[in-house]
Image 1 (spheres, rainbow, N blue to C red):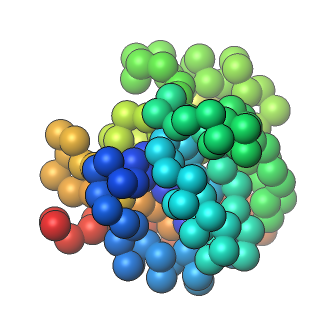
Image 2 (spheres, rainbow, N blue to C red; image 1 turned 90 degrees about the vertical axis):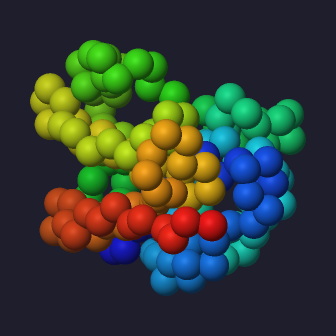
Length: 166
């Protein structure tokens, strides 16, 4: 099962539209996971139309309509793994322990907010993944997103993709 992980798209504030490479990936993925800060309802509608399956949450920059349509926390079993999605996890310091305590029933937690790519493992084996942002690199050298494959109850081929500078 091929997954596309994205977060913090901030359309149209940080970019007028999603990068075409990202939209191509959305069409090829079995599941698209968006960890919040869409900003624009049209982006949710676009990914809903493109994705075979979309799992998304609202973020702190999302308005009332996005908060009405999306939960703050989403959960799904994908390929035998228990996934969770949330926008904010707090500061980097202590993140693994804090998230393992908050989500003891998960195998993988996808999060956003910082725009900083992250891949770590917490106590008990909780895998934490942040794909960064495909539209707003902030202090990072590149805009980013992640792809991965879930097979035989494990994560494989986790790839952080760098997008060309605009």
